[in-house]
Length: 95
Image (cartoon, rainbow, N blue to C red; front, side):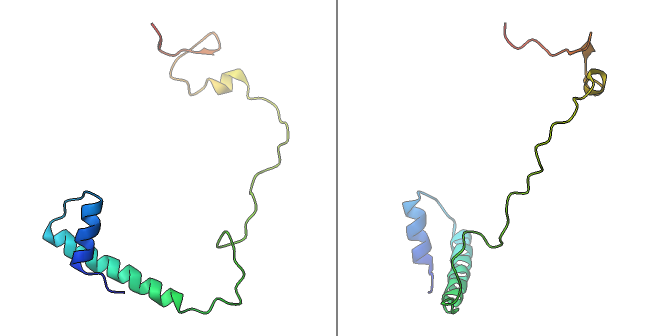
């Protein structure tokens, strides 16, 4: 399929885009290359290929949800910009 500058200008008009002549030429070449590649892919025989929803078969890679001990308070506050009496100090948000 050949995309020409008139096609690009038509789509740009529908999308309410203003394109200069260089952009129109660039887009027409790029879109033509994309559609030419799609034509090539359409020629591939996929009759024996089962449809898939993903390119590779993966399952969720979650770790087991096993209970563990909690983080000690001093360790949790170690990187806090400000702390007081075992609590985070934050700026007042609501007046």
